[in-house]
Length: 124
Image (cartoon, rainbow, N blue to C red; front, side, top):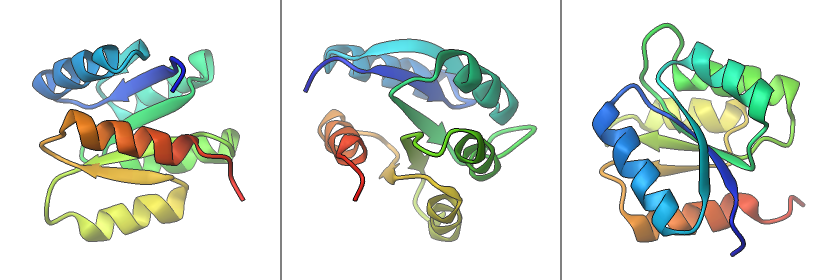
């Protein structure tokens, strides 16, 4: 897979560091890291990355609402929700809001690669 531009959204510094490292190892470019839904929306508007990894639970605006706002403005946004076990209802809400996939925490590099490949497939 060719190098893609990514936006990493999570309020945990440990998680963002881990994701940045994994994405870099996979050959992708992390354009920016955002810690809130508001920051994610602003960063997406400015950067329009190839894909986003989006945490569900964050301060100020959760990942579901941030996804909804991004997809309303950019219908072809490729958003992968990063979720913990037990958040199935929120994952379904995120998919309904326009997310194209999800990945369970703790995130493994192989699963991340699979999720990216899945969301980057042409839409039907």
